[in-house]
Each structure stands twice: as structure tokens, then as C-alpha cells.
Amino acid sequence: MIVHPGKLNIEEYDYNLDDSRIAKYPLDERDSSKLLYLDSGIPMNKAFKQLPELITSDSLLLFNKTKVVNARLKFKKITGAIIEVFCLEPVEPVKDFQLAFQQNSPVVWKCLVGNAKRWKSGMLELVIQIEDSVICLTAEKKLQLSDGYLIEFSWNDIDITFSQIINRSGMIPIPPYLNRKAEESDNKRYQTIYAEDEGSVAAPTAGLHFTESIFNALKIKGVEVDSLTLHVGAGTFKPVVSKEVDGHEMHMEKIVVHVKTLEHILRKINYDIIPVGTTSMRTLESFYWMAINLLQGDTSFSVGQWDAYKLNNHKLSNREAIETLLRYLKEKNLSEIHGETRLMIAPGYEFKFATGLITNFHQPKSTLLLLVSALVGDDWKKVYEFALKNEYRFLSYGDSCFFRGPCK
Image 1 (tube, rainbow, N blue to C red):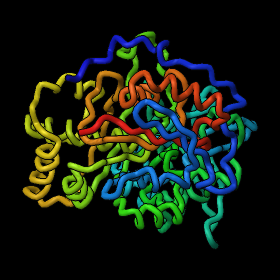
Image 2 (cartoon, one colour):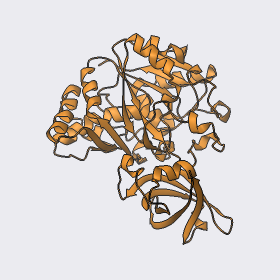
Image 3 (cartoon, helix red, strand yellow):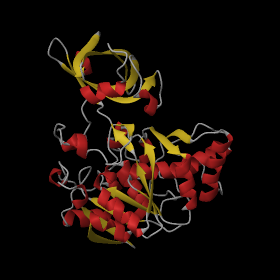
């Protein structure tokens, strides 16, 4: 039975993480990291290259194929003031990420603005070169929101797309806790090797460890893989600052999943389904609540923060949930779900699909740590104490974990 986590005290999900334990850079080889393996409550030291040995054949691994974009744009005013514009999500002329990056001038995005007090009015300008063209990029504030600004970007070449603009003028948004500027190497290393769909402002970091060699070993073992997309928002770094969990507002993130992936999940419904990363986990588990909403006439494919705890009196099986989604897609002649989720997975949550999780180590008092605790219970404390004692590297560029969860 699902129990509402709203009254959980976030202080119970704290631990002492010294800055020296945070990996500021990745290791030279992606798959050379350590792997903490938790099975039946016992943490064990492993190497990430041993992962294929630990996963049973016929399992399904689900990867998030989102791609981190160069979302940080720096403009310099005539006065010398530096204004940083951080692109969050598209607004006009389209809200779909995949289409938004292919748009020509002008476009409107929801953004965060650094040093906004120095930008009272007027346009910001940035001159860049794309191939043989000199491009003048301008940014203009259209509207102030409670959590950002609507910014209109314009440029003087109608054949250039917004994707080309930010790839040339922007910087990759590495996590703030690295306490350093982005470097050239981050453009490659803060990106999974299978990244395809532009739209994230943070990497799905559990996937950073995977190499072609690991994928080949998984294939030989008989482990199947598939992908979905959740565009990771800046809210992923937002700590829980309220005393109780229900005071925290989850960030909305866009989801895309192909009908063939849903069919693959259905075929593997009685086997281990293991998401790679918390973003893949939240996407996978959101499918169940999308199906519940769909049966109630809600076709938005939007999952609210507390839906799992408000809608938990339904007896729909996980198989029936996927079949419900597939039936709707077939009726509407659709090949993909385009949705969004704010789903909070916290202690008290009952997993519908996932039987394990591959993930990195997370910040204290974070919703990601709550998700881990939902899967492994109080063993998370044992795991993190073990990791600190055994010199594991923490956070985005750090080492990895493989948790076995409850059986179906």
C-alpha cells in the first residue's frame, strides 16, 4: 500500500558530504569507476565493468537518451556588466523540445537571468560566427515570471536554427556544486555516449559510465536495452529546504517515449526492469499514473507531484497500465507519448515497474535521495556510510551504485 510521504522530515535524509568527496572531474575512462552493489541489504565493492555480471539475463535496462544543451549564454553590456541567460524550456513558436531547436529566428524561451538587476531594459547583443556567417544574436526580456523570465532571442540569418545558435554561443551547464567553470572536456564528458534528443540542462549522470564495451558485454549476457527521454530541468539541483517533504514543489520535466519502447516494457513485464538513473526511473513509473489518468478521461499525459498518493486506490496491474497507453496510442494513430511529470518518488511509494536502479550518489536532503530511500529503505544510510568509508567519489562525475529493489 502506498503511503503519502508529505510529513517526512527531510532532516532524516541528511548526511555529511565534505567538498573533498565530490568528484570535480570524471575519471579518464568512463567505465573505470567503482560500483557499489547492494543486494539483500548488503553493500559490496565492485568495479563498474562488473555490472554485466551482476544483471540477470533477459533483464531490460532503460536509458534516458536526452542530450544536454549549451544552455548558458553570456552577454556583455556596454557598461561591462556580464548578464548570463540560462535557457530552461521553449515557449514560442513551439513548446516541444525536439521542434524548438529546429526553429529559426525569433524564438521565446523561459530562462533564468543572472545579474538581472544590471539589465533594466533594452536588448543584449552577442556576435558569433557560424561557418562563414557572422551572426548577431539579441536577447530581449518580454515578461518577468515568478520563477524566471520570458526571453525573446533573435538573429540575423533566417537559415540558422536555434540549435546552431546555442551550440556555437552557449556553454554546457555543469552542476553548481563542482565549483568551477565549464571546460572544453565537459562538452564531451558531461554527455552520455548515446545522447540524442536535445533539451536537458543537466546530464542523466548514471549513464555517463556506459561505454560501447559495457553495452557489448550486456548484449553477450542477454540483457536487453531500450531508451526513453526525460529532459532534465534545473530543478534537479534544488534541495528540499522545507522541514517536511510536502513543502517542496517538484519541478516539471518533459517526457517522450516511443510506442516500441512501451511494447518492449510490456514484453518484459515479468522480468527485471532496471532504469539507468533517477530520470529514467521517474519516467518509467510515471507511465502507470498516466494510464490511471487516461482511464479517468485525462489525455494530457501529465503526472502531478502527488498523483501516486492520491490515485492509489486503483487495482490496475502494471501490464494493464501499459496496455491502456498502447491502446490509446493505436486509437489515435500516435507513435509517441509527449507528456510531462512532476512525480515525487519518496519513502512510502510502491514501485510499479522497476526492480532495481543504477544511479550515482546524490546530495543530502535531495529528492533524488528520497527516491533511493523509497527503493532500498533505511539501507540508504548503510550504503552512504559504506561509500564514504571506502573512498567512493560522489555526485555527477562520481562513482556508481546498483541497487536491487523489491521483487515484482
